[in-house]
Length: 153
Image (cartoon, rainbow, N blue to C red; front, top):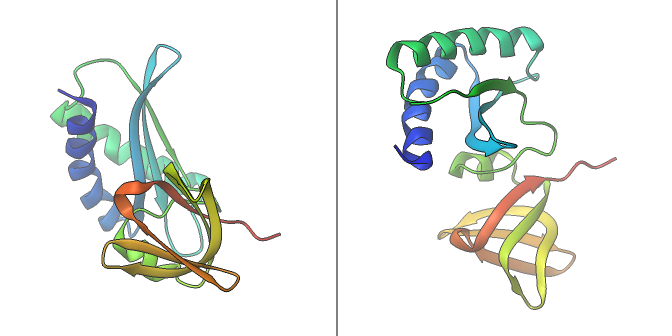
């Protein structure tokens, strides 16, 4: 089974568990690092995620993964908070974080730049729209490597 198929199968198992626990499944990744496979879940909830929340989710998803066995080889399971600089991936993220400062990283340079920072205006017709000072930028989602919240200190 391919890496993306495994991620989709695991996401289908994880979403109902997250919803039942009133958590948001922000992201998951299944990747090989230094010769070992890692399955990482990033969860959140209003007020933030605690270590106890991570443990509860880890136990529940671990039981479900053992039951269904969607991954044919050995891997490490990790559960954590997405962090203050969380990625924005789903349509609802672009609504929820409208007005916040974001970093948009592109696959290919536009006007000689791959990194843009600005206020998130939203998602319009499949494009992420930000305002940088007095300039508006709109980037097609397929051209974006990642959109992350910026931590203002």
